[in-house]
Image (cartoon, one colour):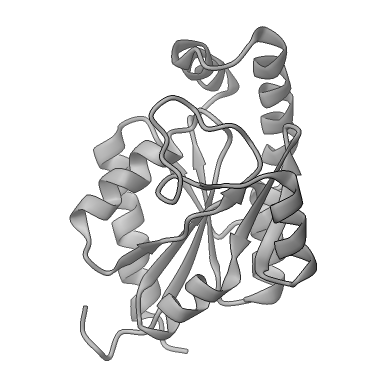
Length: 192
């Protein structure tokens, strides 16, 4: 990163199963200027997830304390759990010229855009609801009723796609990463 490059806030949303974690992990392997914001959540860790790396896993009481203290850039309830983005590390990384990436759901993305109008909203999509369902079933981490609820939420959230600046189709991870890299280059070239 050159010192003249300005910080950039990318907000990446997409339904559970769209490949956000896979694509963003691959993107961060290619770039040394990325800061991935670790969200806080009250949900139970999935197999292989690590506290402080994938999420800050906290109890509901701790989350409420942080929320009451105004420490979140955004927060939302999703599928019965609370999620929030700690504001301080995000703003610090932007001030250092980093590309900050938030992996958050639609309501949270719109909260961020309201508080930080320069945020670039990107929607990662599978191309169809049938493909989304196939991916969720293949993952095998949710009971049938949870999977159905995730699909309902995805259908509802997809209606907000017009609020996003970009839609990136994730048919293939490398292609989706190239699209995200192109967005970063384009956004950093904008004249403000």
